[in-house]
Length: 218
Image 1 (cartoon, rainbow, N blue to C red):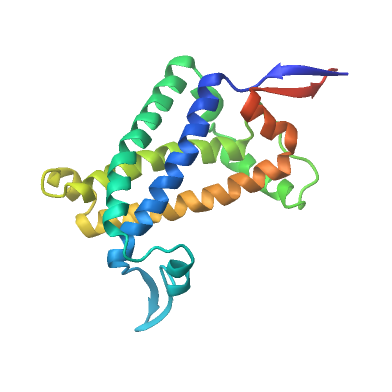
Image 2 (cartoon, rainbow, N blue to C red):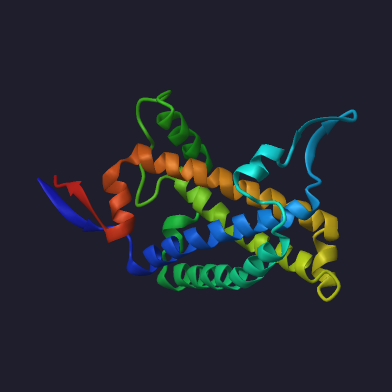
């Protein structure tokens, strides 16, 4: 017999679904800004193997010649992104939800076991509560990454006014690299996250929309 069980609160679902379009806009507008000085590449002994990003990428997404548009969107929506993230942090803290999200001393070992299970290299997954060990690690990491993006973004935005912050991050160019690496991290997180959702099945996905899931009653 199956029963309906509440899994995600309205607040958690709100923060989750608001953050998705905000982060998408931030990455898209950030690309419009990055185009103006796309200096990063994999270069060894003077030979460039790959540039961020190839010309076909810019043409595919119609990125060139849109710097002003990118800055306008980026600097506007960064406030919504920051506010949503701050509210999420305080909600998890005061509601006690952080206890289900923060990794424990076994999480990193068990996260590896979860990965092996997802790759069908391990028959059984480690025991889990509301979130498995891999989710605990990645969901906590994304909060740290969000703070990192906010700090590095402010350092790039106002390097003179926030020179102390900028220097703590290693200077303007270092802050820009850190901001870029964090953005790549978001994209990789999104790919892994969607893959995990697909592997978990419809019941898990629907619970993030409705807040409830069906579970087998013992």
